[in-house]
Length: 491
Image (tube, rainbow, N blue to C red; front, side, top):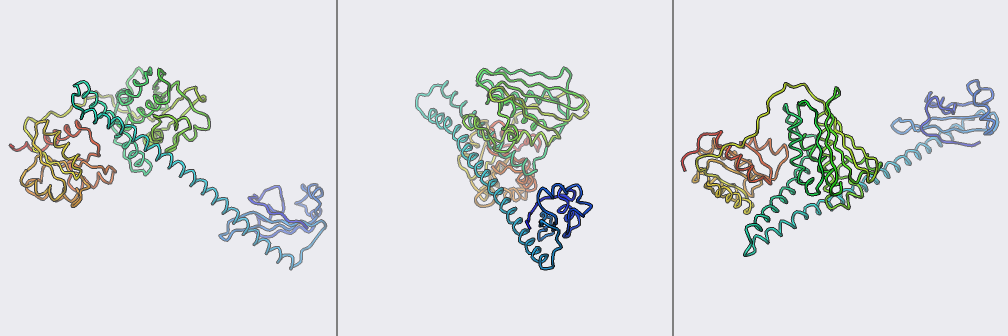
């Protein structure tokens, strides 16, 4: 006799004995295949293999899951004895244990390979993150050194200030990207949808991508529908999608290249394509392209490669809008194309209003700045003093509450992570005082998750800003909040 073990055999498999055993859920004994009517189509196979009798037994896991079947074949007609059936039952238990062990080993090897791949990508990401953060730190240090040198000309100081502004902006974008992709992957990023025109969103995205395009002297061509296209979307997030695609095209296209953004509006929705004549991609890279922290070999060697989160964020934001994004390339050196498809809702045409900065207050404000980082607190206070306001600085929560009673501020800029009382508790206590019950409270903090924003509003804050915040943003916000509240008391 000879024995075989078969896995994943459907009931209608071309091994009649095993298929019948699996269908019945019990052993099947065929004493003579030549006399069994159901075996007629397979008698030639039996003759060629040299068997006349078959015993087939289904194999089950401990939880009842089907593993396969075991079959024993005999060269002549045969009726098994009870002893043979008991021995066969033992073999079946051993075979089931063996199959389960092999499957477990395969699963463990697969998990081990996945963990190794995840660890490799994590290490690559950390190395890239360190590289990306060091890049702006170097010019920042050089600019600070230049500003400290005696005899620096006005032109050189202006150049140094420009370097500082650009590089701090670059670092801010890196951190914003990491926070955004974290919110997307955890499913906590909320869109703020409103009626908006495609033209305005494209214009905003071009403004964000223009420095990257201009640096490499690319030619950018924009083609939009002749008619105005209105859709309901988050204008900030949608601009982020297109600016990321434009920046990606600029990075991976040789200097003097060509980039094109084309939008078409049809019955199936809005389609926006961003094409370039850059380095292109190999076919095997396309399925991995929108995976978090995934980069091709060429990208890893590129000094401007970035963190590998931009395209993952593009996919996440597009999907949040109910759309899809697709990447195409004819191969290395033949350019790339990214296609975003979005649903277009019917919205009434409306005139867009130009965003205007709130008017500067005509009265000098008293501003209390609270931050345990002395450099951050002092530089923020200096900023407002240069704008003509009066400031007081506290480096912890207790000091802030004490100063508030004597300084009586019009606005409080308050950090959350303070060494004694956290900012939430300080805000709650300020709201119980006579001087702070109705004044604007602004959280200026490194904690920028949605939960942090919710807790800030619940604690009594009017606004929540995530560090680093641009100087003009803080100034405009202070002016706006002051105008919304009661007129400032005379200083």
